[in-house]
Length: 69
Ligand SMILES: [Zn+2]
Image (cartoon, rainbow, N blue to C red; front, side, top):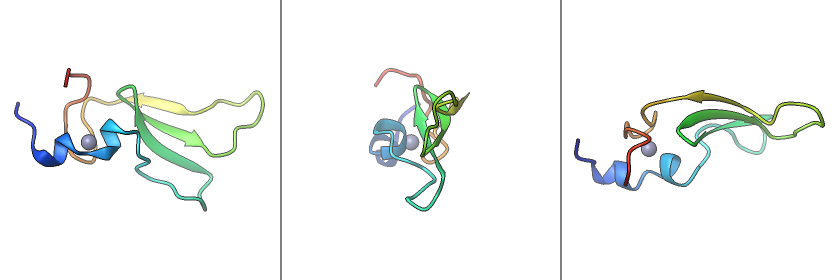
């Protein structure tokens, strides 16, 4: 599968740019280690640091994750 320029430069699946979430939100969403992560902005002691769900494709650009660059 050939990658488009948009997929090669996608900051969401390459640079861990947050997909959803700004300073007003309690949590944000990002791609990390081929997982879609929901990360709370304020992490309380003893609480989870986030929930990850494995994904195969970037939801923004559609690039297949987990393949060598
Ligand atoms: Zn992407």
